[in-house]
Length: 228
Image (cartoon, rainbow, N blue to C red; front, side):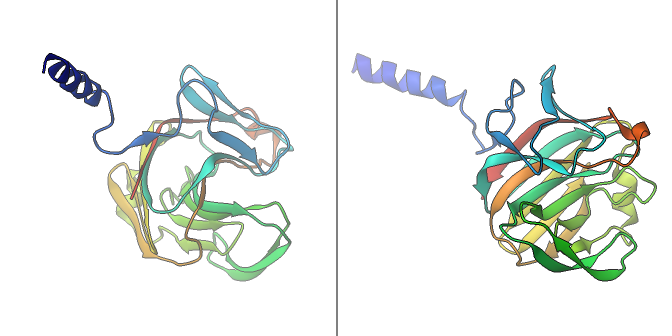
């Protein structure tokens, strides 16, 4: 009986250190374990003082730091700091093209066309991070695919929620065909789509066009997921 009581206390004590709500951290704040680079042969992602950093580099193509595990239905939370003039985003349910692929495409001016994507190109849903005056952070985009699915042109409250030159918080939900995103607690997107049911999660390091954009750092922290 004494051993049973000790075992009960031991297990109970362990339980206080275990997650009670099924959230799992994707970034350990020490290294890039559990992540891999896609889209380029070299990596410009690193860890500094417990923060995951992506640093822009001229000549580097669109590059992504992706989870080695794929996810289907989940809630995802992440905090990010993005400098002015640098576009980025959070990929969900993403993959890589095995062959050259042509898709319809809706650009940032909401003009329709077609685009052809090369084999090896990352594609999938992206929750946009846009520090420009357009302020579509939290909008729903398909990277390497159809382009803008849900821009924020009609969501002024979400556009105002983004904080320039400060830490911001995303909450992202993917549940079957249903997708939602929140920027700093304000709902940005509530939509349905059926293009992809699972895939990796990734952080984007966008290509840059000029020397003035080089060496700018995007910072990420407190990346966690709860599978549904």
